[in-house]
Image 1 (cartoon, chains in turn green, orange):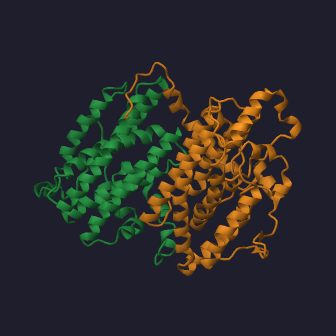
Image 2 (tube, each protein chain N blue to C red):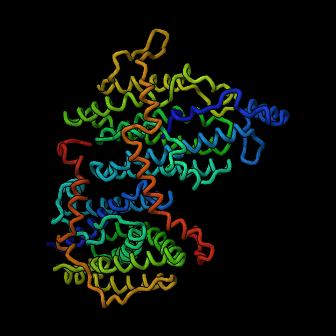
Image 3 (spheres, each protein chain N blue to C red):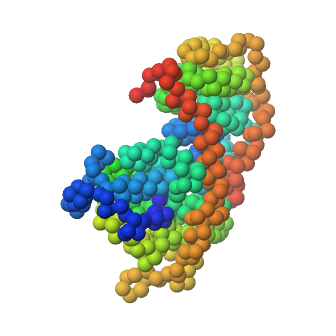
Length: 249
Length: 329
């Protein structure tokens, strides 16, 4: 696949699927303020994915609605972390923390991309992601320093989520060209910055970051291999859209 | 979203407790309200006023969070980016309204935790319309347009009431509801003027929702005899029948205009400008409001699960030994 398309699909699909998952917190948050916060982040992520699918459309791919609402799981390039069900709040919070730290650094780097349309979009997106990271940090520090119950839960969720989070940085065959053409600094460099960034925050909590070298990353997502959770999510997302694909909803 | 449909548990004249209130303070209180002044949280107020307002604002807040559930289930299925993002923002607003309203109710002395606990234990009610199912996307659109429209009629009236914090919350809420109305109308128009599948979906949803919409403002004033004191205190600002008439006058023509029909052969405006309609089934209304509707158990179960699953987070936040984290703003 063309390196631009390869990169854009991964970025856009991550945003769409995690945005969709975050929106599932409606009515279920531990406090109303968190229902509202997760909804705001979901709306941002949906908006980001739309901007990225629009870039893909400008490169000759189908309309954003068609791309988002008619593909099946094997055609998706999101990492598996994004597609896991929302679970309990501890998992959703840790996923949000680990993912958005990577996203902020990713879009900060993409702001200097050699592909100018992407750089422009990235400059706008990174400003919004800053708030996602602030939100995640606030809650991780708060719950990661609170009751024994909270710390135990957060530690378990961190350990469960980390292997999936390492899957964010799975590369594709296009990686060398993505780096050499200046599209993006590359996943390995991003992962290095991410480790630094999450380590700094976790150090301010009672949580322990396991040795990442000893973990096996959960990969496959970037190559269309997904958990059993993605296809049902897509079926649900497209349930109405597919009733009448000719319709203007 | 809200209707006055469940606030009718008003004591009889004999049980108002007014004979125990200081007559001088009471007279001054009533004079202030008559002059159009707002009552603020630290002002003197009769117990009955405090109790009725707490009940009313609390029920309104509950209606917002429970009301976010039937529409919320369509966020993940909304067709296309435009609708998906708008549906999320719309439902988020409703949860935000709950947050505003719980804060307003707290100024009267009841905590949010207590109110939410009363909700899941069935002690306090919410708008009855949310006990009906939303089996299709079109049902969600009908709520966004017509239930929100009904809510605006009700809330615009109540925003002129006497309790300051509630009025200020309602002013903000009405401004957002006005957008919901546009969103809902736009979605309904797209369906009603769309493909045969869309038109059929929309007509069926409207037929399903019409009986509930007709009960949205509560029983006829003929059936509830104790509203006089609440009207005098500007707790209740318009009668149920007046709200219903205003709603019919504003929205029935709009519904007919886009080629939809309403499932009531007796619905028409008479020569005096008054809308006539078949009497809603108030026995069924009573049965549903008392817990035996199609979705009562499900709505409360979702809320209870949210409360239980999130309890550890709230416990952690109340931990006095917890290390202080500087707030963002």
